[in-house]
Length: 199
Image 1 (cartoon, rainbow, N blue to C red):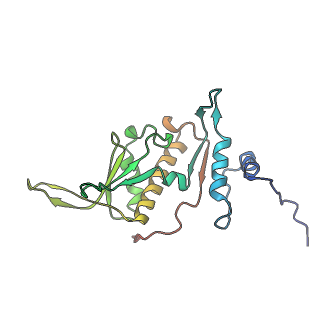
Image 2: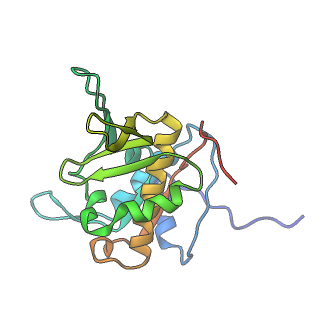
Image 3: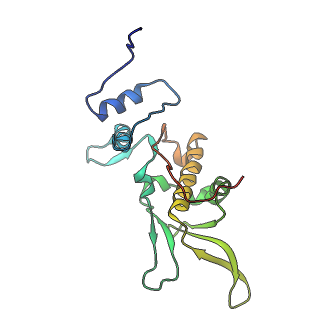
């Protein structure tokens, strides 16, 4: 049996991340068991693409990534005081959300999302919040308005994944707000969902 001379070892995740950056490939696919460091590797890869100025400030980067940290950019405000309006908030301090208001994100996310889910959404860019609904109801004036809901955890994950895909498409197309992106790093996007898929 021929000896495989293509096996390489690395002392740490930074070494592996640098090796991945040095590859002249369009796509690299990695498989690893849970707990072996896939998310830590994604962060090491991202950190190598940062440019830091003399004041220690992050002035540029080159990696748009999807991992557990990306999902954490979204969080629920459950309106505990009034128990009436639940919204998914976006951490708009993140560069991930740069220039979204001009991009008509609803029209970009919607076609991706509606392949798998039956709920609608609206983004309030000024507040950095998102509302969801499945049906319209008559209000006191007799006009129809959305009956807002809190989507399930699986539906939330699916929405965030579609949000990322829409931004990734902008980056691939060279849209100005995302022209800094040289790498897309996707770490284990969705392992389980509790939504019903539609044919």
